[in-house]
Image (cartoon, rainbow, N blue to C red):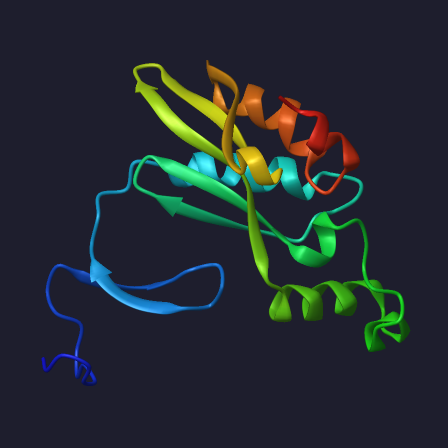
Length: 160
């Protein structure tokens, strides 16, 4: 493989990874620390929300981050957009496909027997921009049920 050149096949020990912004990378395979069941738990809680956030989950070693489509976390769809004439599900599909995603919360595995997670949310205030601790260690389901409903809501900014 030449630096900067095309890869004919994926080298052993590597994988193709696409991040939430749609950038594609060839990277070394890493052992998964977050289980498929845990990811399914987060998806289930998010999908049950009445305001139905458009989200992506990104897993990095012992962390799973929840990203929201920018149209969602600023409050609502742009009503002047061409999508307003489309059925709601088509509006959501198109928004998800073209959205920029912003990291809003992240769950970090803190203990494996029993499985426990810590939770942080992103703070957007200029003087303290970055991740701030919210809760944990606790069961993933407990944290998800309590905190994920705040995504895409004004109440998110009151969590601390």
